[in-house]
Amino acid sequence: MARITAGVATSHVPLLGVGIDQGKMEDPYFKPIYAGYEWSKKWITDEKPDVIILVYNDHASAFDMNLIPTFAIGCADEFAPADEGWGPRPVPNVKNHADMAWHIAQSLILDEFDMTIINKMDVDHGLTVPLSLMYGQPDEWPVKVIPLAVNVVTYPPPSGNRCWMLGEAIARAVESFEEDLNVQIWGTGGMSHQLQGPRAGLINAEWDQKFLDDMTADPERLRHIPHIEYLRETGSEGIEMVMWLIMRGALGDNIKELHRHFHVPASNTAVGHLVLEKTS
Amino acid sequence: MHKSVHDYLADFDDIPGTRVYTTKRARQGYWLNQFAMSLMTEENRQKWKADEKAYLDGWKMTDEQKEAVLARDYNRMLDLGGNIYYLAKIFSTDGLSFVQAVSTMTGMSVEDYKAMMDAGGRSPDGVRSIKGGN
Image 1 (cartoon, rainbow over the protein chains, first blue to last red):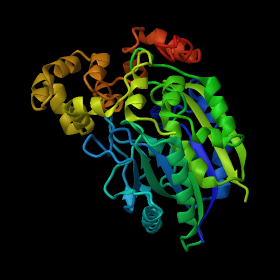
Image 2 (cartoon, rainbow over the protein chains, first blue to last red):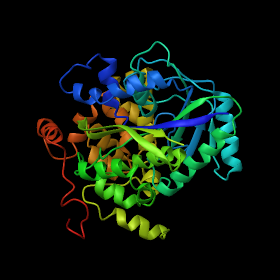
Image 3 (cartoon, rainbow over the protein chains, first blue to last red):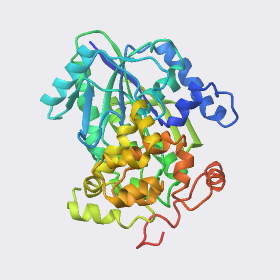
Image 4 (cartoon, one colour):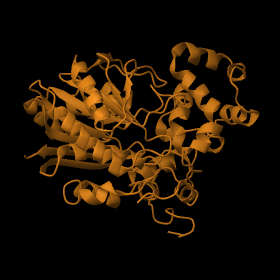
């Protein structure tokens, strides 16, 4: 049977893709940011997951104002990197485990999560930057990726609690897939950042660090953080952190933090990264 | 746990220097945002660069929205229903980074804004709530 073995959380700042694509890894600005991923790159080489369920948000790339799905799951065989205004990132296409994606989609719907199923879509920095941070620059991504897109752009996004419950339902769906697969779930985006208006540039390292702590120490608190708290405390784009709770909900009660990284700033954003192992 | 949608939305107006992208703004900014999305192809970017005004005439935007776009007044675009991830297509086409474009909304020079970010960013102290003054 398929099983979720670990979770990864990471920011997906577009600049971190640019830094890798342009070979600036040793640049003094970037070096301390990428250094925090070195442990994780070694870890994932050993872990060799077969499939990653990659929770991210589309930033007005595949979804425009015509279609705003709260939760969407990519079910096509392959997804190309999106052209976000400066040409597509020079990264490989993302290959899906489409049988498993369809299995998860139908399981979630039967479990009362009414997913949007999407086939034709390009994937933007929200999905490709985490892959680059964890795998570097391979010719092909060495893993199948099931894209799971969450609306965190147009209000209201889903509540943290709803995200958590979706994670639990994803775990049930994975466990009922008959193929023997090592599956990871990643939650991406955040941490504190605000990209708009006179308050832009807001960073709340203290709040972010507490969020990182409570992913293991008090996840129950995180489930119930209201949107207004994310907005006031972590900037208008900090709301992306609800996506981490889908990952966390999928891991269950018994987990161990294997690795943590926090750095300010990357562009306008506080970078946060966790590797969590499921212990039972 | 669930509060009324009216109370939910009212809180958003209490955050200093921030426009939360509500459904009301999404409706107001529909064409502004769709125009910005159109810059995701090289063909459209070339047409846009060749004649910005003529390109905008092809979109059902208000005159105010068009003026804000031509002036690259991002705060005004936000006021008129723009969302930053859509508007990013405009500044990316201009060759600006997020830091460069975002700094224009803060009243700071790019250099000062970058220096603020390198020093740990803008503190939330004093900009959490208008009513609370904290």
